[in-house]
Length: 148
Length: 148
Image (cartoon, rainbow over all chains, first blue to last red; front, side, top):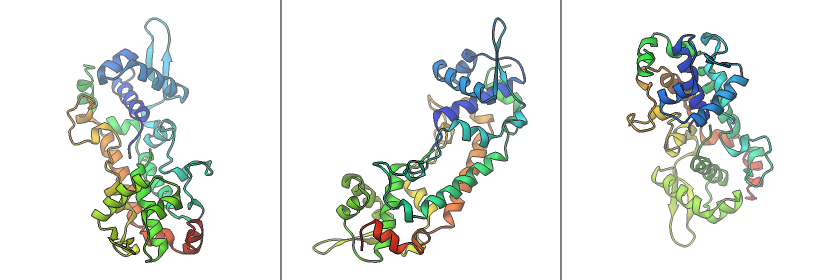
């Protein structure tokens, strides 16, 4: 069980921008800091922009910054929006009548149990914000990201 | 975020054997009931046997049955053993110094938060046993699995 690369990179972008503390950043800068591809990051930043987490200032001297305060960005909510699917097993999909659908879905209690577990997972992450991730770690984070 | 096919099939095998209520089952029978490949199931059953969840009686008239009582098989524990990895993101891996390692691991609090969320996820599933999955659903489950 793992998160998608999309969620992973989304969180890294948000952490980077939070560590920047309001200064503008660029995609090449973030790509270089984490050693990941610019192409992947562009798609991630585009979605984060649509979701309001990232603001893009265009033109010379432009760049990226957080679109809302770090303490308003809840980790659980970010994952709900970036993860795409939390279909832990096939029967979570809305179209239950597919070739791969499990035949016992109608009588099986496992789906409800897994749903409860998923709720608990996201509930924990709803307690934390982007500000909590970097709290007290600003200096070492900036050093690791070569921002100082 | 989803469970591996390995975990999915493991749970299906255990549910099937529990629904059988002690009668012996065969791999072709389980494969046919769920419409999944025998090859995949053989590997799953082999692991479930090693873990003690399934007992294989060899020879004519042999077959598979649960290796322990359904109310002793905890869903969370099964997933811990079948899922292989709960590395939600790269930095969960024990070898943190890899080409793909995230550079900010040393200063990032996200890993601890995700670990706490994962703990909550598994804690919910530790409250449930295989017996809970089929409780009160024996008759419809057997009908869906064409066991009656």
